[in-house]
Image (cartoon, rainbow, N blue to C red; front, side, top):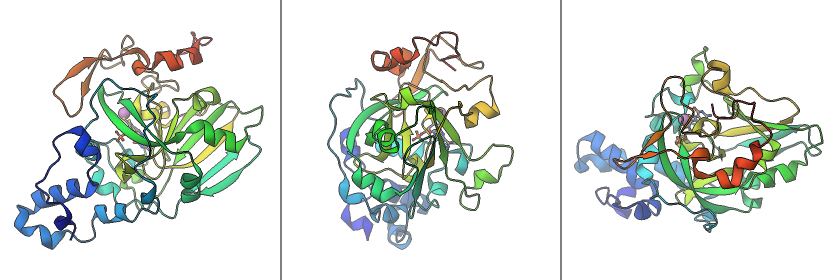
Length: 323
Ligand SMILES: Nc1nc2c(c(=O)[nH]1)N[C@H]1C(S)=C(S)[C@@H](COP(=O)(O)O)O[C@H]1N2
Ligand SMILES: [Mo]
């Protein structure tokens, strides 16, 4: 039984400990609480999400070495917060989608690379992950809703995928798409949303050193609710740009229209760079609530990554860069 490996009441106290703790502990605890006490735990544990995670065929690759170039001045958000507070509209338009997201089957999983590239291909996710130069990076993550986290992502620089594809000269943007399967993701039955979820970057953004394709988090394969088996992390942009559970990268000459841009073009644009001085039409972006703490802190221009990315936008002053 999973419960015997580490008791459910041994809840990690610090972010560092949380980072080293199997996800199983968190789920076990929630199941235990739901069942009304630890006495019942043994009867409800077999087969849950923790087990599926144990079976991830890339689990042996983690933890990966941390790249210390990416420094952070905040504590890592405890894993249990990150696992229980997610935006993933495919599974519901609220934050408690973790349980529903366990229905997503992340194997077999293929990723299509197409459009204006020399090497169109469909790759198996395990081949992709095993070939990739995996590293860990600590990144801030700032949602447009004015909350933030600090996450130990594992993955690889997106530049490697671009180099593998060899874009043709006409390619200016990369359009990314999430899986579509309404039988698994009940949110996708809500036909007023323009499924599948789509996001885009310019090639310059995608090849900036900060653009990161995430395959893991907290020292193991990334959890389903966080966007397994492959999601984006572009930490200088609002969180909605960091598309989850990607199935396709299309290189194109035309700027893709992203999911939220199509729904509310006056509130969510293509660029969506973080800027505390440009309010959302319905709320201020000046500050952010740091999840896992009681703190509210000032938001920083480009979420604190201006040194690395401000140059990408030097010729684009007339564009709505911050919405
Ligand atoms: N496919 C897909 N990707 C998505 C979303 C989504 O609803 N569907 N939500 C976005 C938003 S608004 C945020 S803030 C982040 C949330 O990532 P997290 O749950 O790991 O914090 O994922 C982004 N990627
Ligand atoms: Mo978000």
